[in-house]
Picture 1 (cartoon, helix red, strand yellow):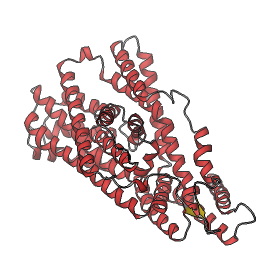
Picture 2 (tube, rainbow, N blue to C red):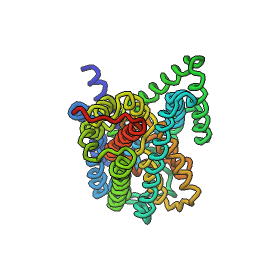
Picture 3 (cartoon, rainbow, N blue to C red):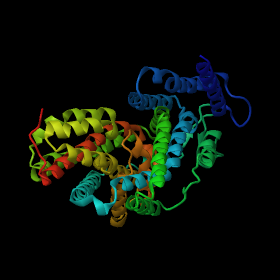
Picture 4 (cartoon, helix red, strand yellow):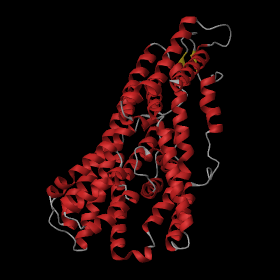
Length: 472
């Protein structure tokens, strides 16, 4: 009860402060009715996402509801001329969410890559089984990114949508009816988003280092730790602990995802209009098409040709794992079921499945890599950036490498997207354009991630002569 009372008190205080700040004119006093209305809108938004929804539904559904409510709230408040309230004050929570994600990018990538590469073990001792597995993972991930790049270049979902990029939109203040543009003194809400939050939500640890240099050093360090496992056991334990700690931080940040998605969607719809939703729908279609094509390549081309197992047998056997992957958006949580389905229901040798699948859940993320490529080029198109062949090659390479460091938990790839954007010279703030629909696409890409791992298990098992008749 005390915790609830404190939460309510904090929400009321924050709502009154932001409501008053958004209503107060440069001179004089605000209209009482406008002040009360804005305070109530802010209170209702915060109470809904911090007090009500967490008790009723899970986080995945909260984010979906937040997306829908954000669309409605943005449209309704824009119709009432309250774009300033949405963009400058409600938008603070979206900016907070994005800034927190940006804060953990570099250390998350560093420790995840170190642990991922070290987890492979000494490459010199892996032997033919390890070599085949790594070769398969590299090839299928590269194919996935290539499919994504082809789809986004052909469909061009963000082309001609420069008007939906994040910017300080010209909005109308409800109290004065005057246009508020870039030439006017920025409001308190804008200053909080652009000046205050970045000052203290900032990671001083290797934060300003070139991301490719961080990736390269992490790969070298992971390989060195794996090559001297007996002498570097303490260091390996440290990095694994740090990896768990970084994942915990990501989970904490994702607790803000519902209010963050709501604020970002409301701000986008209020300031960009219906064009934003049309562009976002085309973007989702591009991602899903790319994932579907890669799924077909894996299941109907790679599997029968290299694994010599019928797609029907594979899909029937793996259906429990694939359904769980889609519903949980976590390849790590699905791993026990995936191993059981691949060995018992499909017929891959248990020893092969127990080696390939845990390794795949750590470093093989076909769907994630494809998604990173499509999202990065979509954001570039929205910003009107015509990426050269060399820049798209950088996106290709970075998406492949970063997918190795993607944790198998929901939402982990959102932060890693900033790595790809930064490498290609695309504004990181563009993440806010696509964050609203990330949770739905996360379900689809996890489905493809688990499919890629499972097909790889069958292919490697066939090459080792370890394919058996399924037990069930």
